[in-house]
Length: 372
Image (tube, rainbow, N blue to C red; front, top):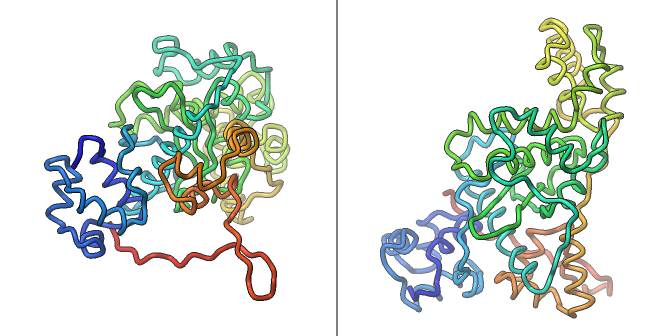
């Protein structure tokens, strides 16, 4: 493989297509043994092998020349990713989205923000609640509800992307890469619950504040810390705790959901974890939630917050710089269809004229896929 090719991108390209090495070997004609060595960086691929792999994955040759390293383990807020295959696909798609967005943002987009994220040592990870309170003061947030968590993150220079993760199991992700001063917050476009998105973004903000300089090796510890931070930020103790007593009812929890724009279930959980209600009351409330079918769909839906920085960057490129979507895809080292697939909220589908004369979005058949 020539020095300009990043061997890690070969594996990323395969995983973003949801393929294992056996399937890629069959489709490309490059042996699995060769692919294994290429992906491990143990030997260089020939130009011919790279062309075969790129064609089999339907990716531009430039994709494999991306110099940056994908994040080995993005930090997720997830339900339960039980499948290794699903986990690899989600990681591959969020990494590919960030690499693409980074290249597009680097092409002449400057961002000025009034605030910044805390430096190492300013915030102790040992007390997530204190960290959330410190951040509130540093970013001059008012008491009570945070009106728009997306705006808060963007005001500090974070980039919020709405990306199709390819699966439903994860709601959001956080990526911080060496050499990149920007912090990336990703929301799954398949997540339609606005209250869950708000808590998920606050959860990823907790990872950014508490964990971005730590290796991801103890998820069992990092996830509870991020959740505690999120609860402290979105349901601040001074105001929220005064609104709770042992007689908490679902009616009262619904009122608090409308006030804080956080789910009824998260409100009940916070009340229990802060010892504001007893174990029997907590159990009773959750049984009532389940009996009403609210575990999956709560009443009083909250709209999903929308980011502004990334859509504005795309608009500048299209209107001021005159870039077409094909040109933006070339900058991102992807195909236009892949860029649309990753960012369905921000890029319109490609249209074609059908026999009736009406415009319709192009329908692409699903490629043959094999498990990883």
